[in-house]
Length: 105
Image (cartoon, rainbow, N blue to C red; front, top):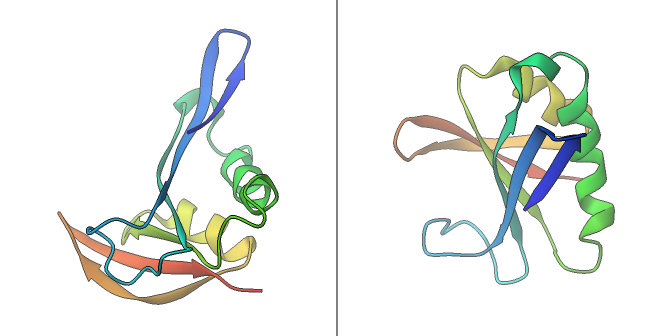
């Protein structure tokens, strides 16, 4: 779990997990970062973009591909993912329609 604090205030959180049965498209050495939460008072400041840039360096040599899924209507997350090198792969159906996205170099 990546947690970013400003003093005692939780600004952002993001979970990182390895392959599970829930993500059949992943291979053994892939990582998936789960939904992020950014405190509403800190949104629109580029925090998610900076966290997305940080993930590959924090987990270097621990993954082949980084995966993420994103709610279809979460346009700010789409933009942050695309700005940091992620590429849309396809649609999935979990609890709602989602976009499946992976990091490409």
